Length: 304
Image (cartoon, rainbow, N blue to C red; front, side, top):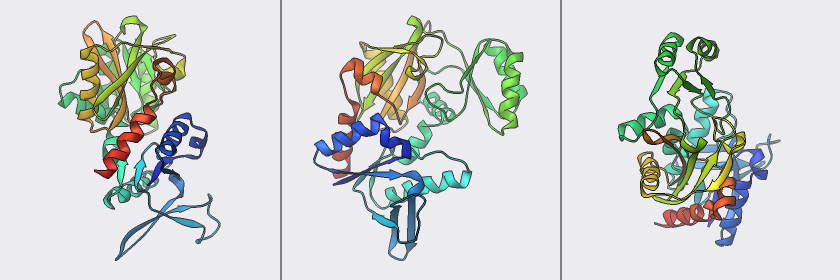
């Protein structure tokens, strides 16, 4: 069996990709790294054939190889600079799914869980606890929400590791941020800030409907991302925490995910869902390698 991993060039040095590659080979299978900007297809009466450039940029039309994996781990779609580029890469992955190849996480579920607004809508519809949230393209509507929330967190819809996330306790200061988003033609996403018990939050890793472990990430400031200096420690999961993480992954249709949950004075609250999670901190404090669980689940699912 050949298992593809979608990624970008920097992923060749990525520790998560290295973990997945090692586990795939340990299971006796071949690995194919599929670079997002090297995918191509030919479409005709015989269906769709997927190709992968051997070098990037390709020097000639013959500098390509047929791409026919038995299963695919969807990690990244690369740096997106244009809407058509984004939809093209989506359809490359969707073409694999339509040809019967198991993609994990499934493309549309991955796309939904990668978008903070879509995630909030789905979790809310499933009556799962999230911070009060407002989203708009009108900066004056965002201003009113910031006044209502008193202390707010402003986030890009698609971001990771806490980069580009602001906390504001003054709506007038927030107006400068809202104006910046508006000038970039970006929607504004505002959440009510919730104080986290213990000064951090939990990252619960869910694979195949099971919470396999949790870490508590204690921040050096209000952010709890390890990339922002938070210190991970092994956490004990109570039943409520475990069940909440599993329900969030199930609501979004994810085969695997990192679910970030904070304990507040109002109880547990889901802050983020991560369909392309990083797990080095989690692995170091729990002794659990999510890659082993993910790869075994993919192999089982692709054979069913």
